[in-house]
Length: 145
Image (tube, rainbow, N blue to C red; front, side):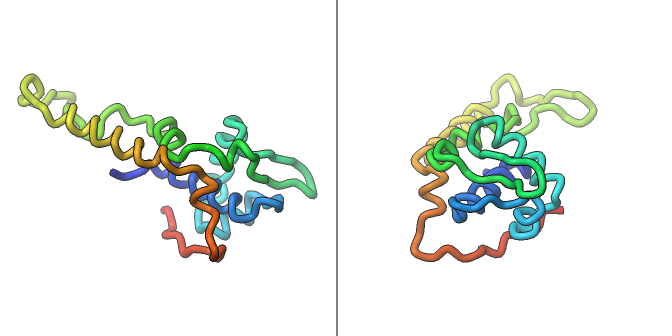
């Protein structure tokens, strides 16, 4: 199962801020630390603020800080909400021709169940669970093009 790039950036942002709970961090600093373009992080900040996961202050001394609700946010719920894909596989070609096996296909429903099982496993974790550990060092995140 592959997360969407946007869901990945949102989760990275929450995890980064979760590891710095008592600090306000600028969007620029978050982008530099997690290796993601500024615009992608800015979009994630807006989404997470709208969900109540972040407090955001504008201006010279502004920045983002994770809220208690953000720390308690279930990872599966967030990923499920941010995954806008209807199906794991496309059953229609780029030309708009439906798959000839579509009528008798059991793969789509099996993949839907597998995706839900993936999210159900992530529902067991909160953002706080992902950010509380004995070691709080920066992780080398892969870059997003």
